[in-house]
Length: 227
Image (cartoon, rainbow, N blue to C red; front, side, top):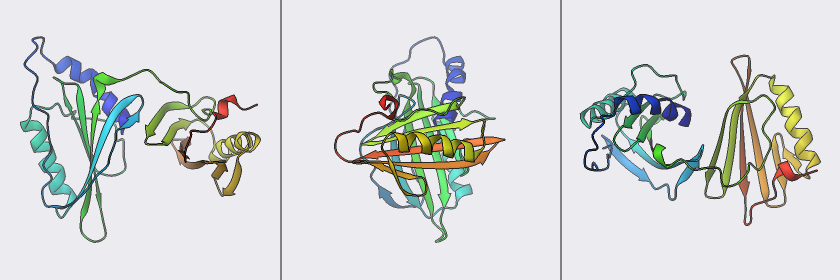
């Protein structure tokens, strides 16, 4: 999701006018056909950018919701890139408030019951910070599009590597086992209170990888520091 948000940042700078207007009121999306709301407490940090998430369920179909969100964004004066790289398999829309450098993304996921899950993300692009802690695991050599996330005790590392899936799997398995992890299930590793899930998928003559690291209690030692 974040790669799409960062992609519109440059366009947002160009679209912003030189004068500094009064601070605008925060933009809020109204969810048509609202059925339920799921509270997502706290703030996620992805790529060192703070993000807040909200999750809703709507009885409206995906096409209707997508049009409604596009119309609301346009009416609020948000910048919507007309041609962007697809950043999720689900239908989605990203809009940028060039006055506050806040990016809003909606991802829609239809369910078999005829309802639609609506995930709304708000990213403060002007509040990007330097990494405060190192990654808990090393990144595969030659990896591109590396992105780290942090959310309430869970850490993520995602990237694309120009290698076969089996190569990436073997590389991580060797290092995790050497660092004291045990593979309790296929691609699920545990060391003390720390659990690491490795997800791999073939894409574009390479491998998309996602590592999800969850720690109960104190954060475990970094794998980078392991002998």
